[in-house]
Length: 471
Image (cartoon, rainbow, N blue to C red; front, side, top):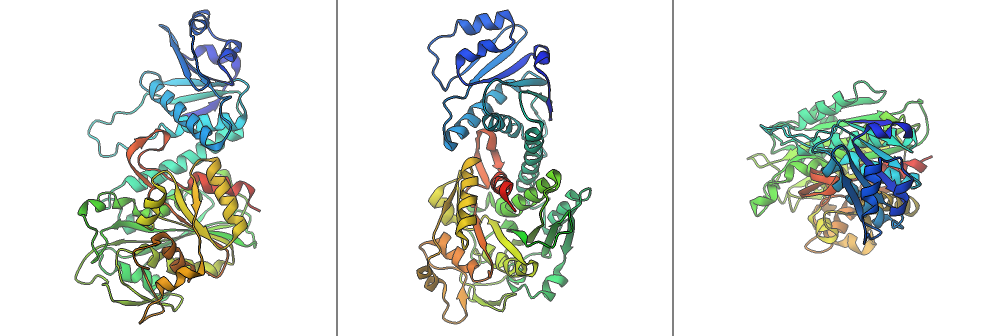
């Protein structure tokens, strides 16, 4: 869908118009036809949050009020209202104009972002590919650089959603790795797809153990973005790339828990999306992305409860639950991240059901070792309304993952599951680090406004907002 800047004198040519105003009476400052103005004048009993629409034979006009938006959560409520407007416009019109009258650029950004994100559809496997009719959004009263940013980030989110929505039958470990490499072919990013032999050379015991039950070999993808050949300390992003998770020999029960496990690479998809957006906006700083990829399946060769695995760091791990596989592959990647002199490492993973149980499907859990970066990330998450809730990394939780026969065990028991997973990962980091557990928010079973249904791309908007102030 094309997103472009137009001028006020051209708005009459658009049959579908969306006007952003602080309050309803401001609609009459817009250049609208006499018939539309007359119909708006007849509207009464209007509350400050209402979206008011009028329709004539030739026009469909929406008045979106914005003065009531005073905080981050209300801004997201506005996004949801704009998503409903998209649904109304997209059935009959090929183009629309969004006219910003006196609303702030931040408010306008949220509205256009929601409108654009609402256009996503995954129809690859539909016999009848019913798509919306909109192909062009013209914007009046907006800054061009904001529109470019919306388009780049939204496209990255769509790519992440596409990856998450693909079944494992068409997105195996190797296909996912190839898809990542192809995505960056025409950019200045450098992509290395490492095979099993390289993973063995690196002694990545966690990734190799999880992969033992698979018919597909593991992959390890490294994306480097360094447009200025900088020697600065790097930001490193790590994404969990489990393309399908049966739970292994600790099989998921009931089996319905497997229905959405194609989404267990939601963290990896988010990291890929972030890197693509950074390339598109020509981000001026050094960033590395590390993505360990495998599925977690059952076979006679699969790793088993009771196994002891030697990790890349030399740490030994007693496996008590093969369904705690995400932390096994992340641990090797986090240890490898130290090779890049990181200023900060952020991992993104659909890691624990405990995080989902705690904060639900529209938020995520975070924890980390650098208080200032962590608070900045939380603030960024609230601004885009992908809320992050900080969980503690108190030392008292460490005893829950101490093993009797190895250094640590891969689960900490029935309580504090999201925290003990974080404590496990902390054993493999020696640098400033933040962990994001997006277990509930990476995939939605029911449609939710501009987030859609299925893969969401959760985390991309948060990290992109966070990186606005990266130095």
